[in-house]
Image (cartoon, rainbow, N blue to C red; front, side, top):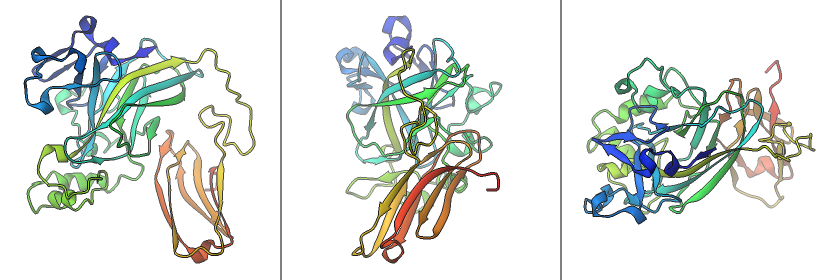
Length: 356
């Protein structure tokens, strides 16, 4: 089951772009966004707008084939882009599939990015909005997409990718059955209650001296960070987004899967996605440690799982997932030296007990 972008466009590889409309066979935009289709430089020429402004020539080094996709993960103002692909056949419940794709970071003049690039399977292409809602009302802003229906990815990359070279990402997915579409992009944040109002403020008069201008120039956005060694200007669209390119999507059924799914020591469970992941990590701090320890944890909690921190006789539940989807969270913790010296710090994922 091949999802390579070159193989899913119409007319034997002849790309069609007309009046800013998006045309790619078996791929669609689930919101009213403007995902870009890029040509590989090997097929670019003056007839393919190479003579236009450089940033508009849409000619890049694709990972493979003749075309790739470029999309905005999220902007300072909450604008997002997603792309949904239709599979050749529905996934079979209980079977394991290898999902792989190539991704790379892209920027014009400011290195700005965020984490959370991911994908989600669905039975229908209408993953965000009901089918009856017209395209022009499928607003591509975070606070519009997820306000009434938070949707979490099946898998997401919790690290911030700043590599401008293609890198391959591979995941193992156990099908629920009937999935016919896969959507790429950024999905719901685990703690997003303050984001709705934030994005509304950002889009209100984003001029010099405004809340939006200060958020950008002072690098205080909750979703995008400026990794450049210079202060960003508040104006200019290139300074407003986290942008990635996507290519060579593959979905392969593992007919000859030889993974050992038996229970292993200290493993979370028998799920093939986590079978080889220990359910806890332990750390010990030397007696000479001074200052403080900062820990950032990026767990993926399945339904009815919780993240627990223990040190000495202290035990604290950091996060719990009472939903029906995988919950990708980020927990930032700080411990003074006096609380950890000569003690074991244990970070674990446990099943939620009925009383919790």
